Image 1 (cartoon, rainbow, N blue to C red):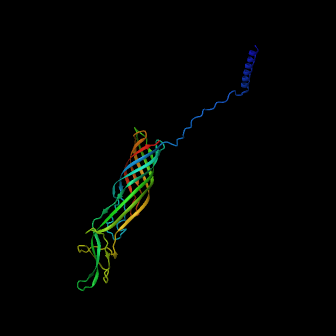
Image 2: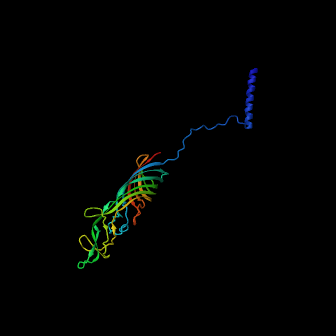
Image 3: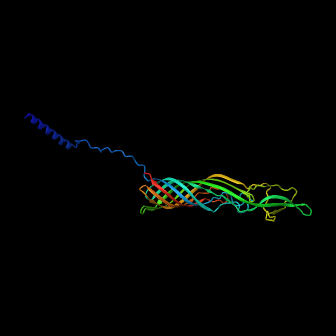
Length: 310
């Protein structure tokens, strides 16, 4: 009986203490804390991609030397082989990487190696000064002038232009229909050009290098008669006495501002790969310091692949 009474008293005291604590607002248990979560790496971004492109181009040939008469003032018109305004087929291979910001905007950096442009040519034949001789009066034998004798020459040019182009590009995708995404874009950057070229005159008769030496006949007045290789009088050009040479050589490197405009479409091949087909107008700046030279331009069809890397 005594034990039962003690247990009952203890229970009553516990209940009273709990009720008292509740009345006073004293917490009866420790607060719960959120469970620790496993750390997840923070992703720096998605949308990175690699690209590779093959380019088929119709591009200008470079003007390597100056306009007729600009470099060698005695050069007859048409003999300086300018290659201005001409075009030829070319190609380029490119690599790059970029970032797709959203469904509408992306940007990339690209580098491309372009095929070397070879501007090799030879001119038609023209009259070139080959010798000078004194002229005497037939009856008296007195010196009366100087005969400038002409033969036939040709001009020859060999030139090579190697180029590398780097561009920063931005594109605007115009929506996607059945995996097909048309786009427009623009780019700016630099082009690096390395030019080597040579130009000379050659004797048409045997192909030997033109290079006579003119010595003024002593005692003869500066009255000139210009005679072609058939013995006929022809309009004359000034005579520069001494060794004659028309050889010119160029070896130069240059960096120029480049820019491009693009339009095309991409087609989704897999969840990561796209084929990219488009047109590009490329202006590579002017690599030449020749008078009258222009910026090199190219109209291109490009086929490439883009691969998402994350």
